Length: 302
Image 1: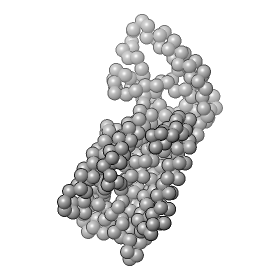
Image 2: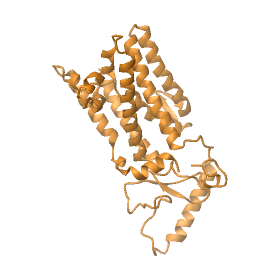
Image 3: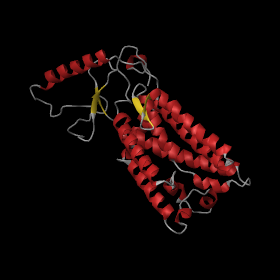
């Protein structure tokens, strides 16, 4: 059992639905406020100096700072982030997506303070107000691409590229943002980009370590079909009579069913030896049942 598995059992409140939607709504409100007359956004941006003076709401409201001033890009950003977060909830579970987002915000705040203290007195304090979770949200896409390295993604909505390459392309684009800022003479802004990207990468690495992430071996399509057919036959034997069973799907780890929790999705695990089905919260977080496979129960890895 990984560290995140144990935390999930203790911090069940993080299963709050569609947390990313609220972040996107905050982003949209910030985009509108930025276009209104007056200096409303100045009361919401990240400012360590003012936070230390008691304006603690800035620890949260900085997520409203838009990463672009173009409405089309803002709409595309909101749509993509919501779609990716919603898809990830179906793969790794709602709790883990929420944990990633919240821990990422905390880490970004810490990096914002680090930036403030490192560059104090160098005339770069103003740029810390540009802190926003743009790169943190983008890491959700990196996680999705790591889970499906052979899936094809449309780079710039046109060019099909496999997930494993999209990870490197995404990081290369971040590096290009920094180099571009330095080359145009915006050294202070370039450094805040460095700190924002570093915070996002640290969040990703921490998430993977706590998840007990292990690059696993691929499972052939044939073995998946065999196990699905095996599951179907076992289910028919156990439930044909209808006695003692009022559900169709049951998680082998937590015991929840499609009847007790109809909002959950249930899938077979292609890496477990046998007919084992799990809910969407535990499909990618359980210990595989097998004969010595990495992460399996027989290999005593979690």
